[in-house]
Length: 388
Ligand SMILES: Cc1cc2nc3c(=O)[nH]c(=O)nc-3n(C[C@H](O)[C@H](O)[C@H](O)COP(=O)(O)OP(=O)(O)OC[C@H]3O[C@@H](n4cnc5c(N)ncnc54)[C@H](O)[C@@H]3O)c2cc1C
Image (cartoon, rainbow, N blue to C red; front, side):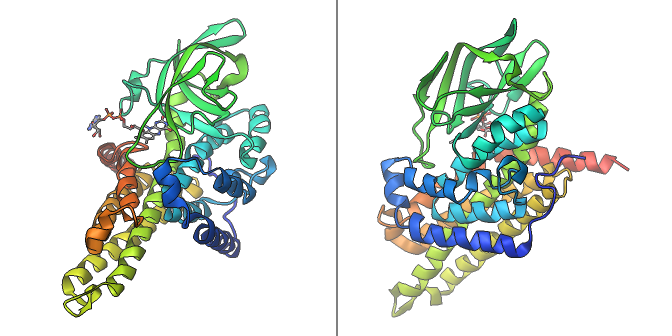
């Protein structure tokens, strides 16, 4: 049985309180500034400081290691709230949390005690670096190498799509060793250069702005012997296991973006008058609203179901894949329909609809494309069908 992210489910009253306080903060501090920061592609320093103060960088990390120790149902509800205000905020938390979770599940007690408290407080930001220029979906094609040299490892290669890579102070890195793909903890100073590591490119993006997604070159970068996390050669299943949580994060993010787009469309439909009545009274618009709300509700329920299953320590590759697949496709459809309901004004930069429309497609690609989700779901179903 897989390890569950929190040993005990969070008290529903505590969960509600946490989610309500994040929701209030998002309405007060995030919504008014999100589009401006996003258009400027500016890192949200003040918002991140607030997120640290609220404990969000350690939301699922056990209290014993300085985190809030909240369960995954709380996590997905909080991620939905963050993405409702600005999807990039949920991305700042995602690979950070995956890096921490990997240490918690697979690290030694020394590694947990050394890294988790700083990650929990957000003093040290985490990232996850699996993808390479020739290995995105095809993870078996990784070419970044870590070679033993006495007590150290020497890393050479190019990684790409490293979200939070420049500001991170700890990167969970997948690299090939003599016995297969292994996971390493790369300690660094935030910034474009550290030891043999160079941020070789800051990748320009359609949306998901305000946080960096970078290419990183490793030129004979030296790691201490204890940088290996988990068993040598078992890095890929280890990281792919943690990615179930990443997929649930994506599903929750998609639900947040979709809810923001739906709320905007519902409000606008009641205000905008054509042919002498609010467009909400035209049946063509009502049909759109009904479909959008149904997809939104289904996204949330699938996300919660996957989170509950993961929380219970059960295998949830199928459920996390279904939630990510459905919610991300729904978010793009809902954002598109919200734009159509807004007519011309939905296409302008005066309203956040265009931001939702640009942010939504990432969720169909990140944490494994939706084509791959379908394959994962089908394989999981067939595998379960074969079992007694
Ligand atoms: C903004 C952004 C942030 C990211 N952040 C991170 C991060 O922090 N860390 C990290 O490690 N990675 C990150 N990624 C990488 C992301 O996980 C990959 O982009 C994704 O897995 C797809 O890989 P690829 O881009 O190489 O596409 P490819 O693998 O080249 O796929 C291209 C197309 O072919 C399809 N395809 C490929 N193989 C198959 C197959 N066997 N069957 C059917 N269809 C197939 C894909 O579905 C897709 O449609 C990020 C990506 C983006 C865009």
